[in-house]
Image 1 (cartoon, helix red, strand yellow):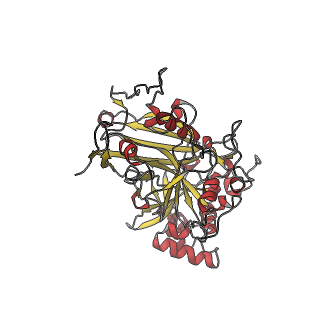
Image 2 (cartoon, one colour):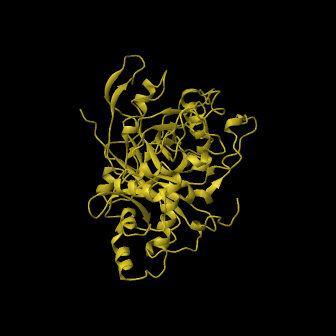
Image 3 (cartoon, one colour):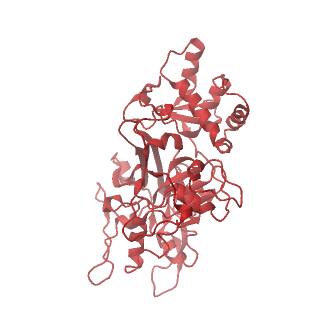
Length: 452
């Protein structure tokens, strides 16, 4: 990859008339412009983009004539999608968002506004993010969650199979399962502690009740744009074209329920009660400078089969963090404490490989489908992406599991798993010399007590 931006929209020297977007630490400079949905000033659901500490109403720009230079079918499709407030419609033709992005960026450039009407439009079309009601950005028709971190797979495998942590297929095939699209929710929505079957005592039968080992999983979500016809696989070298963008994803997990139910068919009620995604989808265009080769295969690792062997690098250098704040910490106005920090580039499988494999049997992906990366974990303890891993200490000399080591919070509280009132916050961003910092914002969730 060249060090010079080939895409003019990524020029680091571009500045916006939204001053906060020009701050070095902003998640949302003019080079980013991630997609979102929000309730606008007329209390109507609208498609927007994040710019600095503001949300811009794209539909208002359209009706003000900002898109008049866009001709033909893109204009008709944009009008229909913006009028309906449907980001899903915009993803049917991925190139339409490229047109929208370029047009919105020109409007946001730090240039003379060109008249009183233009100045008024600048004032009306943005809303402070802190005051905006941000909605779940998409309603995915389908959701698939992968298991793409070899570090996560090794850690979890070691807990239950110390002598055979990785199953024989792991380094040959991107493993995934079909999740529940209807329970994909937005940031700040409460997570009701699930109830289900568990077997706390191996010497007795199962019981039913609230989950006692509730966990988060640090993930990235990949949103599909375009899709493929049923029966027509997506080739590895065109798979990246199916990526509209990425968001933060928290795959909430009931570990005690999962341990009892996962054999023989894998996750079910332990996973389908809630999946949180961030309000902003950072587009593939904005992520282009942060592509990397991804982790090198180790000596003895098999080469991917040909249909998974792409010519381009599609690992992504995305810094990720998890913060935790208990109810007692909030009551005492204590800041959340960081419990983990990792990076998406550590993943063993890339999103294009997941897409190529997902469609290799002719499965049809659809616009706004959501793919989860699986828990993002790295080789260090502090880069483990869930409490199941973070509090695990391995096995002793006798081969028996060591007692778990709880996380210690500033209040003196300890956590092996999440308690009611706990708040989990995930953040992500990309940085590279010669480019503006690109952020994903946050995804948050607070645990609410189980309901009868």
